[in-house]
Image 1 (tube, each protein chain N blue to C red):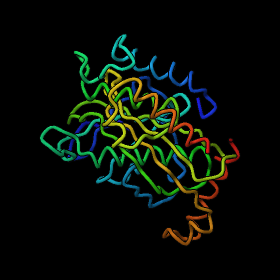
Image 2: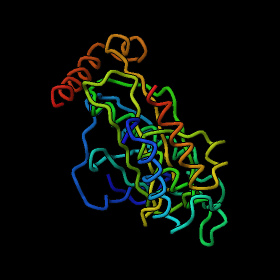
Image 3: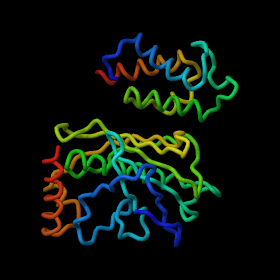
Length: 187
Length: 84
């Protein structure tokens, strides 16, 4: 997605090397409102992801609605970005829903409002790996300098358990499971 | 690069990463006292080391690290712990 900063939304810039946006399995849900990655949530981050080497990446630029100290991007927002990209990477990789259990974020330096950044996530997990899973996310400035380094632990959730913990209809559960099964088959 | 690395190769790799970032310094030089090296540079190189070995050093440990020798010791301990 690309957008200009307006209405308090995050504007996401073009990827440095334009590549296809990754389709997330959640897109099949008619009322998909994820704060991190749903394009339909106007109050959310509306992150979009592109392939990046062995992982995935997203481009970032934040306006003042996401400010902490004057001119500085709020650390909680950056933490959410890191969590979101790692969680989605793992779901894409293992084809199973995951929940965050631990998130360690190290802020190397501050991120500025109105400046372009890039977040990259990687993991060694794949569909043959038993959980819990670990992933890394790093936010880089335009010069390639590291701004944030994060490590997350994620617990896989079986489809049946997922149904108990998430408010989904039977129809929605079938749609999601179909998408996740495709991911598992691809790996 | 994982727990199978020998102590010697850890020292070589870690010192290589640090020297690449801060220049050719002795193993016992206080990294933060080097001209042009600030806490951001040190944190970035520690992050590179953590990524290389897929380890997480505790914050208290990271902020106490001063020299290449210190970093090598911490990485060795973390890699050994990981292999347990």
